[in-house]
Length: 233
Image (cartoon, rainbow, N blue to C red; front, side, top):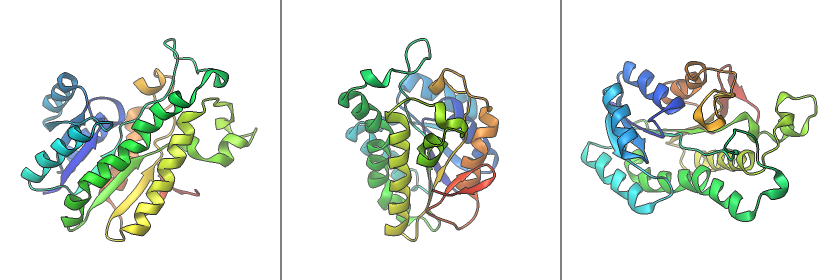
C-alpha cells in the first residue's frame, strides 16, 4: 500500500493527480485548506480528506499526526500554490508590487513546501521508497523569461516565477541532503486552472501527466521535468 498526500488536491491539477494515482492503486489523502471543498473532492474521488494549510504550523503538524496514525507516508505532492492576478485575471503592474506582496507569494509557494517537507520528513524517511514531487513551472527558468524569442518572455509578474525558481533550488538541495529520498520538480506547462483564471493552453489531464509519472516511476532525483522528460535547470 502506497500512502500518498497531495496538497491542494480539491481542484485542478491536484484533483486530477489524485484521480490518476487512485487508479494506480495509491491510497490518496486529499490535502486542502478549505474543509468543505476538500471533503467534497475527497468524497467524489473516493479518497480521504486531510485539512492542511501550508502557511500554518499547527495545521501541518495535525496533518502529520493524521498520516502517522494511518500508517505513514510514501509520496508527498507539493501542489499548493498561488499566483498574483487582478480580479479580472490580468497581471499586476510590476511597479505596484511591494515587498509584502512578494512575501505573501513566497509564504505559500516556497516557505509552504519547506514547512510541509520538514514536518513530514520523519515519516517519509521511514518509507522504503519515499517520493516528493514539487509542482514548479517553466516560468522558473531565467533563460526562458530573458529570451525575447521564448514564448515565456511576455510574462510580467515578479513574485510567481521567482518563487518557483526558489522551489527548484530547494528541490536540488533536498535531493543532495537526503539521497534516499526521490525528490523532483514537475513542470505541468501552461495549464488551464483557477490559478491563471483558466487562460492556460493545456488541459489538467495533460498537465498532471508529469506529476503522476514522477510520483510513480523511476529512481532519478534532483531533476526538473516536463511531460517530455528532463529539462535543464
